[in-house]
Image (cartoon, rainbow over all chains, first blue to last red; front, side):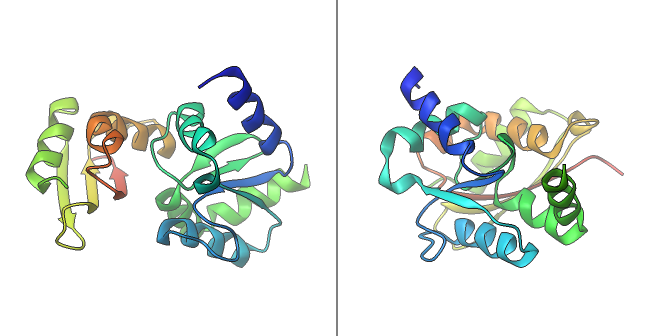
Length: 107
Length: 77
């Protein structure tokens, strides 16, 4: 990943405390896993922004190196990677996600 | 696509004590559900636990032989 791609990723993450790199958009997810994450975040009721990696090959590859995580979607909280679809589902089911988001967004 | 046995072999090569269950969700060999139980996960965050498994499968994921991987990790009871 070049310095410009890293900088673009950091600028995207700075736009919202909860940020998702996904396939497709919030309204039209292009992958079941990305859709899971969007539905979970809607259900928790927190504001979040997304970026469609299908629209940008450099971000699509770069984000995997950024987080050392090979798959999309990727969910970030205040710039820190917290998980993909499986982890978000687990955190949602245990109640941990709501708590983590509420604490982070309140501070 | 990959055979579930290849996935199992790649994970146990990296994590010899792991108990691995692989389920082929579509029969096409590219949408897999994998459960891994290993003491190597002890004390690690979920992100780090999954990163260990992804690391073991890095070739299969990079080549997109595996398109989708649903992953559950845990430590032995």
